[in-house]
Amino acid sequence: MEPSLSHFLVPYDAPPWTKGLKGVPSHKVELAQCNTPIQRWNLPGVPDDFEIFIKRDDLTGSVLSGNKVRKLEFLFADAIKQGCSSIITCGGTQSNFCRATCICAKTLGMKAHLLLKTDKDPADVPCAGNYLLDHMVGAHVYFLPTNLGLHEDVWPRMRQLADTIEKETGKKAYTTPPGGSTSVGMFGYVNAFHEMTKQDAFESITDLVSATGSGGTAAGLIVGNHLTGNKVKLHGMVVSDTGPFHHNEVNQMLRDVELQKADGSGLTSEDSINLLDGPIGAGYALSSQDELEFIRDVAQHTGIILDPVYTGKSVFHLVKQLQTNPGMFKGKKILFLHTGGMFALFDGRMQDVFAEASQKVTVWKEFTDKAPLKV
Image (cartoon, rainbow, N blue to C red; front, side, top):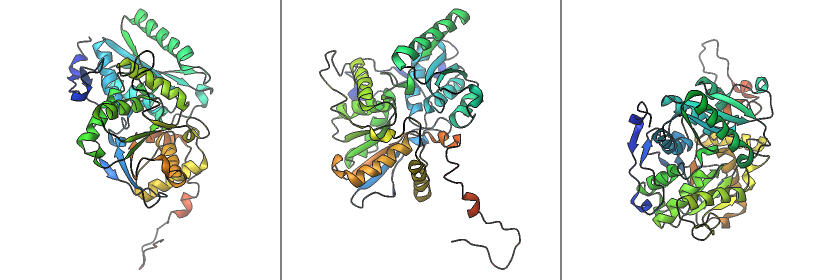
């Protein structure tokens, strides 16, 4: 363990119902601003017989906002306990997890290496949104082709880079997959589920909805829902890869904590969460005009800022399901878990949505006897 980093570790007071799990973390690093509030949400387009609430995990920090920082509290603690001084992860150029990871790393005095998937030349990638923040904190960035598979292509490169760092610097590097979705990282949402139970969220809530991008949040919610005996129905809006892919990833995490056996018996993802493939739309991080206009409308009606990669697609599809497939839900009180990620809004994709914004601006040069109010 690095002496200069060990002071960041604090004992983790795990919920009592996690006692039988394998690999419950002993420590965490305090990075997130918790407890985040649960609020009633007057979401436009929702049928009158439904009530919508929102868990504001977009408020877990400023540049560290979102679900990622909850996972990183446990991942960085694990890295520090292993004596690592660098962290390596991967994602897209607008990855929320990569942005949060490199900012957390710098906060703790560590180095960050990001393997980002894009087919563009570096000069053609706008330094905006999450990617701007990556460079603001001095992350080491490596571009990979988008057609590389995670397990067969990306992981070997991450391990090779970690080996190279150790050979050339004598210091260890910690590797974590996209979204921090491991049996360590998922404790961020085991802990969040415990937080929601203390907020009495499940006294009336019938359904819990969140974006599913890498599976770690879903795994933590499944574990919490199962071990506490709550009967809330979980829904995951798939915004990358496919439902079967995420079921496989979640099942591996369930095996890691010994809630599922090697033969697949025990607790399974397929029986624990309803994963919907529709929200991915045109593809990961690709937005339709309808989705972007929906994000604008939600902001203008409710003051809640959604992002175009995760929460925007998820809530867009949630409203569609409420309108066209209400029987999918267990009941009428829906809690949406806002997982943050607003910085992807600043990569330029919203420009067309607000192309006419200048026409709505009133130029008020002269002071007269009547204010130029536009209703």
